[in-house]
Amino acid sequence: MIYIVLFVVSIVLTYMIKAYALKRSVMDIPNERSSHTVPTPRGGGAAIIMVFYMGLFYFRENIDAELFYALLCGLPVALIGLLDDIFTLSSKIRFLVQSVSAGMALYFLGGVTSIEFILFELQGWWVNMIAFFAIVWLTNLYNFLDGIDGYAGSEAVTVGLGLFLLFQNPLGLVIVAAALGFLLFNWHQASIFMGDIGSTTLGFVFAVFVFSDTGNGSIYVWLVLLSLFWFDATLTLVRRYLNGERISQAHKKHGYQRLVQSGWAHDKVVWTALLYNLLFLGLLYYVESGWIVFVLSILSLVGIARFIDSRKAFV
Image (cartoon, rainbow, N blue to C red; front, side, top):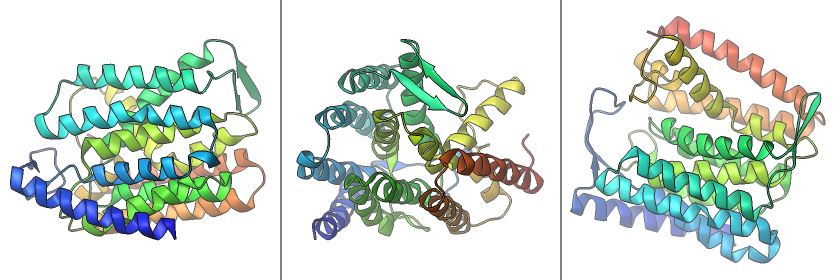
């Protein structure tokens, strides 16, 4: 019942935020890097984040105290994201707040002592540096991948399902309910965008879940659940660097953006991504060895990248 209530609250909040954004002209204006053509209200992701934190407090007794306080560290990220949606802040200010929040989250989690990955177990104080940069990177890459209607919201739905089915965490269904309420307004043709408050905070929250437990092969699970986003963002960053481009400069060379440029509709890209995510979620659920599913996902993503290159060259 609580999930239905949260779903309805998400719908109501998204509607109210949309009305407020229209009244105050908090709009995303199309430019040469945009995948949309008409001015659209932004900041709708605030509904997702508010509903998530409502659920966090509701289920406080069902999760570890360390995880609870680490997730609360996402609130400064949400605040700076909201301010950026309204006023457009310096990237240095955003990075500073995200970095402080990442450090605080790791502190409340008790640090990361080891990470099991492939045939190795990474250990030592420096593992915390890996975790720190990974949290900041995931916070930002989720924002980078929020560029077409329904994409970041639908990713949140499948990641939330994974969190619930594979880790038995009730917050997973909270995320599903929150994202679905928003998606009713964000599906193509979107009437409101998620904005930085939604995308960066979701990336941060997912990163906290990743590093809340790095044993028992859970890292493979998270790498697969978030594979479409981290693979696309990281591959694009590397390719732009090798091309001699300024990697800090805005662009629209991500795989999902190039698919849209090649003629695919927003919803076709999103449905395809959903099918991929649900397929690998099913494999994670039924296949005991997470690393096998991880390897299969990487091979699939390489094939997807080559297909996208055949549709729209990376230039």
